[in-house]
Image (tube, rainbow, N blue to C red; front, side, top):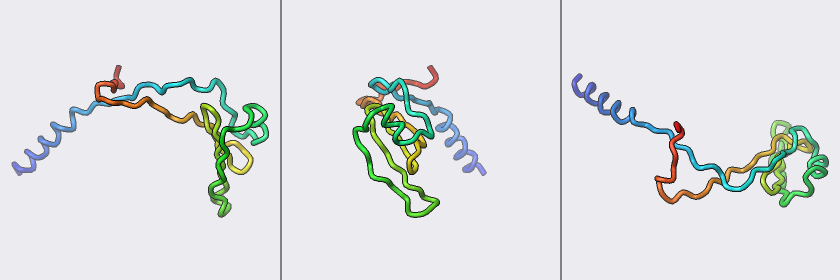
Length: 108
């Protein structure tokens, strides 16, 4: 019983000192506008021009796995299911951290 109590107190002492850290904000400007979900591929091209890169579709092997295509633009990526936009995402690009002192507490 004493061993169990001692082990529990030992474990409790180490779990109570947790701290939440956050990374510095990503560098570079975020796009001011993103395409709207449900837009067609043609509408996205009309609004934003041709993408920098068009990736080949992934999936499409069954009705439960429709083809998903990604187009990369400067500042965001557009994901399509067949011909319709399902999401536009700004990729995370946090600056490199070289030392633990560059982390900031999330509680500030």
